[in-house]
Image (cartoon, rainbow, N blue to C red):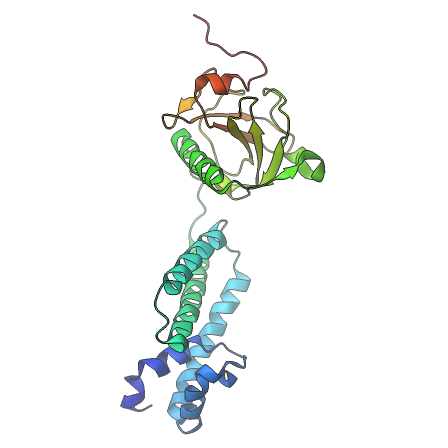
Length: 270
Protein backbone atom coordinates (compact mmCIF):
# COMPACT_ATOMS: atom_id res chain seq x y z
CA UNK A 1 0.00 0.00 0.00
CA UNK A 2 1.44 3.39 -0.95
CA UNK A 3 2.11 6.20 1.49
CA UNK A 4 -0.33 8.36 -0.45
CA UNK A 5 -3.12 5.85 0.15
CA UNK A 6 -2.30 5.70 3.85
CA UNK A 7 -2.66 9.46 4.04
CA UNK A 8 -5.98 9.53 2.16
CA UNK A 9 -8.70 9.57 4.87
CA UNK A 10 -11.45 9.00 2.31
CA UNK A 11 -9.94 5.67 1.24
CA UNK A 12 -9.39 4.52 4.82
CA UNK A 13 -12.90 5.52 5.85
CA UNK A 14 -14.43 3.83 2.80
CA UNK A 15 -12.57 0.58 3.58
CA UNK A 16 -13.81 0.64 7.18
CA UNK A 17 -17.47 0.99 6.21
CA UNK A 18 -17.38 -1.54 3.35
CA UNK A 19 -19.22 -4.55 4.76
CA UNK A 20 -17.96 -8.13 4.20
CA UNK A 21 -19.71 -10.16 1.50
CA UNK A 22 -21.76 -7.18 0.36
CA UNK A 23 -22.20 -5.21 -2.85
CA UNK A 24 -21.10 -1.97 -1.21
CA UNK A 25 -18.39 -1.43 -3.85
CA UNK A 26 -21.11 -1.16 -6.50
CA UNK A 27 -22.57 1.90 -4.76
CA UNK A 28 -21.85 5.21 -6.56
CA UNK A 29 -20.35 6.81 -3.46
CA UNK A 30 -17.77 3.99 -3.23
CA UNK A 31 -16.84 4.02 -6.93
CA UNK A 32 -13.57 5.82 -6.17
CA UNK A 33 -12.57 2.97 -3.81
CA UNK A 34 -13.39 0.31 -6.43
CA UNK A 35 -11.17 2.12 -8.95
CA UNK A 36 -8.27 2.30 -6.48
CA UNK A 37 -8.64 -1.39 -5.53
CA UNK A 38 -8.46 -2.47 -9.18
CA UNK A 39 -4.94 -1.11 -9.54
CA UNK A 40 -3.57 -1.51 -6.03
CA UNK A 41 -3.06 -5.09 -4.70
CA UNK A 42 -1.79 -3.77 -1.35
CA UNK A 43 -4.96 -1.73 -0.87
CA UNK A 44 -7.02 -4.82 -1.69
CA UNK A 45 -5.07 -6.76 0.95
CA UNK A 46 -5.87 -4.12 3.55
CA UNK A 47 -9.57 -4.36 2.64
CA UNK A 48 -9.40 -8.14 3.10
CA UNK A 49 -7.83 -7.84 6.55
CA UNK A 50 -10.41 -5.29 7.69
CA UNK A 51 -13.27 -7.46 6.48
CA UNK A 52 -11.85 -10.54 8.21
CA UNK A 53 -11.85 -8.53 11.43
CA UNK A 54 -15.46 -7.48 10.82
CA UNK A 55 -16.50 -11.11 10.30
CA UNK A 56 -14.72 -12.14 13.51
CA UNK A 57 -16.65 -9.47 15.39
CA UNK A 58 -19.87 -10.73 13.82
CA UNK A 59 -19.15 -14.29 14.95
CA UNK A 60 -18.43 -13.04 18.45
CA UNK A 61 -21.78 -11.27 18.55
CA UNK A 62 -23.59 -14.42 17.46
CA UNK A 63 -21.75 -16.75 19.84
CA UNK A 64 -21.87 -14.66 23.02
CA UNK A 65 -25.22 -13.70 24.61
CA UNK A 66 -25.74 -9.95 24.55
CA UNK A 67 -25.90 -8.39 28.03
CA UNK A 68 -29.41 -7.35 29.00
CA UNK A 69 -30.13 -3.74 28.16
CA UNK A 70 -27.02 -3.28 26.00
CA UNK A 71 -29.01 -3.25 22.76
CA UNK A 72 -31.24 -0.46 24.05
CA UNK A 73 -28.23 1.59 25.17
CA UNK A 74 -26.56 1.17 21.80
CA UNK A 75 -29.72 2.21 19.97
CA UNK A 76 -29.86 5.34 22.08
CA UNK A 77 -26.22 6.09 21.26
CA UNK A 78 -26.87 5.47 17.57
CA UNK A 79 -29.93 7.73 17.61
CA UNK A 80 -27.91 10.47 19.29
CA UNK A 81 -25.14 10.14 16.72
CA UNK A 82 -27.66 10.20 13.89
CA UNK A 83 -29.28 13.32 15.33
CA UNK A 84 -25.91 15.06 15.52
CA UNK A 85 -25.13 14.22 11.91
CA UNK A 86 -28.61 15.28 10.79
CA UNK A 87 -28.12 18.76 12.20
CA UNK A 88 -24.91 19.38 10.25
CA UNK A 89 -24.99 21.28 6.97
CA UNK A 90 -25.10 18.83 4.01
CA UNK A 91 -21.90 20.12 2.42
CA UNK A 92 -20.55 16.69 1.63
CA UNK A 93 -23.33 14.10 1.44
CA UNK A 94 -21.12 11.06 0.56
CA UNK A 95 -18.70 11.77 3.42
CA UNK A 96 -21.56 12.31 5.86
CA UNK A 97 -23.08 9.01 4.78
CA UNK A 98 -19.76 7.26 5.41
CA UNK A 99 -19.61 8.80 8.88
CA UNK A 100 -23.05 7.53 9.81
CA UNK A 101 -22.09 4.06 8.70
CA UNK A 102 -18.81 4.40 10.58
CA UNK A 103 -20.83 5.13 13.73
CA UNK A 104 -22.80 1.93 13.14
CA UNK A 105 -19.63 -0.12 12.65
CA UNK A 106 -18.11 1.44 15.76
CA UNK A 107 -21.15 0.64 17.88
CA UNK A 108 -21.15 -2.98 16.68
CA UNK A 109 -17.50 -3.22 17.67
CA UNK A 110 -18.32 -1.80 21.10
CA UNK A 111 -21.11 -4.37 21.52
CA UNK A 112 -18.81 -7.21 20.52
CA UNK A 113 -16.06 -6.07 22.86
CA UNK A 114 -18.49 -5.75 25.75
CA UNK A 115 -19.99 -9.17 25.09
CA UNK A 116 -16.57 -10.84 24.87
CA UNK A 117 -15.35 -9.10 28.04
CA UNK A 118 -18.45 -10.03 30.03
CA UNK A 119 -18.14 -13.64 28.92
CA UNK A 120 -14.84 -13.90 30.82
CA UNK A 121 -15.81 -11.89 33.88
CA UNK A 122 -16.93 -13.76 37.01
CA UNK A 123 -20.66 -13.70 37.56
CA UNK A 124 -21.85 -11.17 40.09
CA UNK A 125 -25.13 -10.69 41.92
CA UNK A 126 -27.31 -8.04 40.31
CA UNK A 127 -26.93 -4.57 41.77
CA UNK A 128 -29.66 -3.57 44.18
CA UNK A 129 -31.75 -0.69 42.86
CA UNK A 130 -32.23 1.96 45.48
CA UNK A 131 -35.61 3.50 46.20
CA UNK A 132 -34.27 6.88 45.04
CA UNK A 133 -33.21 5.37 41.69
CA UNK A 134 -36.62 3.78 41.19
CA UNK A 135 -38.40 7.03 41.98
CA UNK A 136 -36.12 9.16 39.79
CA UNK A 137 -36.30 6.88 36.73
CA UNK A 138 -40.05 6.39 36.98
CA UNK A 139 -40.71 10.11 37.44
CA UNK A 140 -38.48 10.94 34.47
CA UNK A 141 -40.56 8.54 32.36
CA UNK A 142 -43.80 10.01 33.72
CA UNK A 143 -42.72 13.55 32.89
CA UNK A 144 -41.75 12.47 29.37
CA UNK A 145 -45.14 10.76 28.96
CA UNK A 146 -46.96 13.90 30.08
CA UNK A 147 -45.08 15.91 27.47
CA UNK A 148 -45.58 13.41 24.64
CA UNK A 149 -49.15 12.45 25.55
CA UNK A 150 -48.94 8.85 24.26
CA UNK A 151 -52.20 7.12 23.40
CA UNK A 152 -52.50 3.67 24.94
CA UNK A 153 -54.81 0.73 24.35
CA UNK A 154 -58.15 -0.02 26.00
CA UNK A 155 -58.02 -2.72 28.64
CA UNK A 156 -59.97 -5.07 26.37
CA UNK A 157 -57.26 -4.89 23.67
CA UNK A 158 -54.98 -7.53 25.16
CA UNK A 159 -55.37 -10.81 26.97
CA UNK A 160 -51.74 -10.79 28.17
CA UNK A 161 -52.22 -8.16 30.88
CA UNK A 162 -52.76 -10.89 33.46
CA UNK A 163 -49.00 -10.94 33.96
CA UNK A 164 -49.14 -7.24 34.87
CA UNK A 165 -52.31 -6.83 36.96
CA UNK A 166 -53.39 -3.44 38.20
CA UNK A 167 -53.09 -3.03 41.91
CA UNK A 168 -56.25 -3.93 43.83
CA UNK A 169 -55.31 -1.16 46.25
CA UNK A 170 -56.41 1.49 43.75
CA UNK A 171 -59.95 2.64 43.01
CA UNK A 172 -61.42 1.88 39.61
CA UNK A 173 -61.22 4.86 37.26
CA UNK A 174 -62.99 5.40 33.94
CA UNK A 175 -61.12 5.25 30.67
CA UNK A 176 -58.00 3.44 31.85
CA UNK A 177 -55.60 2.72 28.98
CA UNK A 178 -52.41 0.67 28.97
CA UNK A 179 -49.04 0.85 27.20
CA UNK A 180 -46.04 -1.46 26.92
CA UNK A 181 -43.10 0.32 28.57
CA UNK A 182 -40.70 -2.63 28.74
CA UNK A 183 -37.19 -1.55 29.60
CA UNK A 184 -38.31 0.70 32.41
CA UNK A 185 -36.19 -0.15 35.46
CA UNK A 186 -34.59 -2.96 33.48
CA UNK A 187 -37.60 -5.26 33.17
CA UNK A 188 -40.76 -5.96 31.23
CA UNK A 189 -43.35 -3.40 32.20
CA UNK A 190 -46.82 -2.03 31.49
CA UNK A 191 -48.10 1.47 32.17
CA UNK A 192 -51.74 2.13 33.10
CA UNK A 193 -52.77 5.72 32.41
CA UNK A 194 -55.39 7.00 34.86
CA UNK A 195 -57.42 10.21 34.93
CA UNK A 196 -59.08 11.48 38.08
CA UNK A 197 -62.57 13.06 37.92
CA UNK A 198 -60.98 16.51 38.29
CA UNK A 199 -58.73 15.85 35.27
CA UNK A 200 -55.55 15.07 37.22
CA UNK A 201 -53.40 12.54 35.39
CA UNK A 202 -51.57 9.62 36.95
CA UNK A 203 -49.77 6.52 35.71
CA UNK A 204 -49.33 3.18 37.42
CA UNK A 205 -46.19 1.39 36.22
CA UNK A 206 -46.19 -2.37 36.81
CA UNK A 207 -42.76 -3.97 36.39
CA UNK A 208 -41.72 -7.62 36.47
CA UNK A 209 -38.80 -7.69 38.88
CA UNK A 210 -35.44 -8.24 37.20
CA UNK A 211 -33.13 -6.75 39.82
CA UNK A 212 -32.83 -6.95 43.56
CA UNK A 213 -34.83 -4.24 45.28
CA UNK A 214 -34.67 -2.46 48.59
CA UNK A 215 -37.15 -3.21 51.33
CA UNK A 216 -40.54 -1.95 50.12
CA UNK A 217 -44.07 -2.06 51.56
CA UNK A 218 -46.59 -4.57 50.22
CA UNK A 219 -49.09 -1.83 49.45
CA UNK A 220 -49.28 1.88 48.68
CA UNK A 221 -47.71 3.97 51.44
CA UNK A 222 -50.03 6.41 53.27
CA UNK A 223 -48.15 9.41 51.93
CA UNK A 224 -46.38 9.72 48.56
CA UNK A 225 -42.91 11.09 48.05
CA UNK A 226 -42.97 14.60 46.57
CA UNK A 227 -40.75 14.79 43.48
CA UNK A 228 -41.52 18.35 42.41
CA UNK A 229 -43.86 21.04 43.70
CA UNK A 230 -46.70 19.54 41.68
CA UNK A 231 -45.88 15.84 41.30
CA UNK A 232 -45.51 12.91 43.66
CA UNK A 233 -44.72 9.21 43.52
CA UNK A 234 -45.25 6.03 45.55
CA UNK A 235 -43.53 2.64 45.30
CA UNK A 236 -44.48 -0.80 46.60
CA UNK A 237 -44.17 -4.43 45.56
CA UNK A 238 -46.27 -7.58 45.53
CA UNK A 239 -45.48 -11.26 45.44
CA UNK A 240 -46.58 -13.03 42.26
CA UNK A 241 -46.71 -16.69 41.11
CA UNK A 242 -43.81 -16.10 38.68
CA UNK A 243 -41.59 -13.53 40.34
CA UNK A 244 -42.52 -10.35 42.11
CA UNK A 245 -44.17 -7.23 40.76
CA UNK A 246 -43.01 -3.68 41.37
CA UNK A 247 -45.71 -1.00 41.46
CA UNK A 248 -44.87 2.65 40.93
CA UNK A 249 -47.68 5.22 41.01
CA UNK A 250 -46.75 8.62 39.61
CA UNK A 251 -49.28 11.43 40.11
CA UNK A 252 -49.45 14.86 38.52
CA UNK A 253 -50.48 16.22 41.89
CA UNK A 254 -49.77 16.12 45.61
CA UNK A 255 -50.91 14.05 48.58
CA UNK A 256 -54.64 14.72 48.21
CA UNK A 257 -54.67 13.64 44.55
CA UNK A 258 -52.64 10.56 45.43
CA UNK A 259 -54.94 9.51 48.29
CA UNK A 260 -58.01 9.93 46.10
CA UNK A 261 -56.67 7.02 44.03
CA UNK A 262 -56.44 4.64 46.99
CA UNK A 263 -59.25 2.14 47.51
CA UNK A 264 -58.69 1.96 51.26
CA UNK A 265 -57.55 4.93 53.28
CA UNK A 266 -53.98 4.47 54.46
CA UNK A 267 -53.89 7.58 56.57
CA UNK A 268 -51.20 7.27 59.27
CA UNK A 269 -52.52 6.58 62.73
CA UNK A 270 -51.87 9.49 65.10
